[in-house]
Amino acid sequence: MRSQSGADAVSEAVFSFVFDRRRALEVFPGIGIDRLVLAVLARVSPAAGWNGCAIYTGATPLDPEATVCVGTRGPGADEAQQQLVEQFEALDIPVLAVYEGGPEEAAALARADEGRWSEA
Image 1: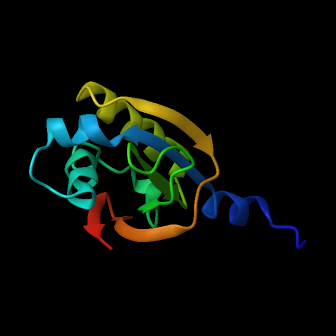
Image 2 (image 1 turned 90 degrees about the horizontal axis):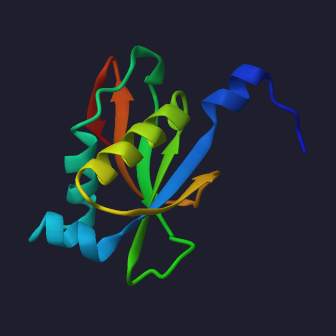
Image 3 (image 1 turned 180 degrees about the vertical axis):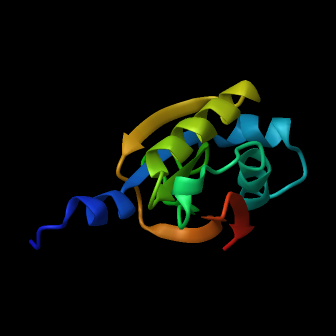
């Protein structure tokens, strides 16, 4: 295994969390999961140091019928994860697990760029 410098390790940091799919679809009826995550993400303003931070969905380690896993990767990934978890909980959507590390990306959703989120 190749060692990474501290900056490389931070830029490749990956975090993830799992939320309750059924409750989320009750709070946001009629929209798909990707749009639902983007709607919650719109409540989070990315800090300048998050440029390049990616938000994505991937395979959930829990029940795939009942949960969704969201990953954050890159600069500020830990802070983005924390703020997303807070926003899901503020909307009464239970976050069932929080992880350091995460699944492979299944669907890229957004990337932070100059203090704004852009769709990936």
